[in-house]
Image (tube, rainbow, N blue to C red):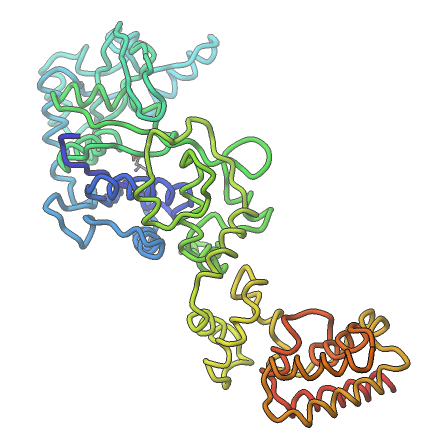
Length: 507
Ligand code: GLU
């Protein structure tokens, strides 16, 4: 690769960024970093009708939260700005004019009513109307290929609305290359003459996208499969301008967890998982869509599962840090076929990344989400987190797994009570209380040794002691090591809980 690698993520700020869009950004980022290149963010906001308040900020926040910040983009000039197409408006007209002058594009004045009428006519004959080589010069369509130069000039001078259309070449077989899909051949006769520019001064996506990729010296265009049908036009535009074309890679669709079709917000709503990185409040309706971050997923989880949607390392490895992804990533290992989204797998990743976090960090998050912990020392919470986190997938699981460290049980699981409280239990627990009271050095180890020795001496079944003991402390037969729990809640609390348990169980 002689040319410096420069890639761009070019979203339109029309709403929250779907995780499919974030995957596109991630693959661009990985490719750029792997090749010591630049990752550019370009905001494609030429369609003012679809502009949504807050969508651009949402995009940048999502990239930052995911740990894949852009090198160049809005508010981060790298010498190729501005990076919002709405701020580049003045540039595009020149390029539309250039194509008009070289005969590669033409003016068209057909009104939408006229075009509708053509569509209806065609439909009535079982055909589809396409504005193309076949009919553009037949006289029924109103464009500069059939009108005289004077007529065109006077229509424009009088302020009549027009569009500039690309004159797709006739009778050519185009050879298209895609890093993921390989070589493709396309007959140019199936193409329509796409609109490039409108008399309101705005370019369409196609023109703005090509001009900007060229001016920003983009070397590789990595984007979603939905843009594959535009590839022929884009390649023809590069050719028409006489510019070298970047390389292209179209990423496979992300498919629904079950059934056919691509992953949608509805799938997430139905099956209970987010399809957006961050929570999003629609500025018009006020509707709130859940986000991975707010649902308790770590950025590492999202990056890891997104990386494996369409790409595979060629090994069994599934857990990847961002650095590992950068070094292993290769567009040649991106599949052509759609990648099925698996919400259970994302939880598995989160469970893993939760284990890698510092207990103190998790404790802070746990505390900030749990009012009952407001007055509890953070270091104490961290110790408890260390004892229970291996059973958790999210920080929001912590309270259920650990409430008994902070609060005495208010009731006892009736099934467990039946199983664990027998005739001899009251006597046994009285003796346990006795041992506890006499244990000076109140550590988990010491308690374990004392209580186990006593059990062995007495020849009582282990379960006969441990089951009711756990039940008294926890309210159920769950939780981490009983001796750890005893140590953490302390001697007085242990005795208090055992006394209460005996009262309730014998009542
Ligand atoms: N603005 C387009 C989008 O919203 C960009 C497509 C491309 O990357 O060329 O996805």
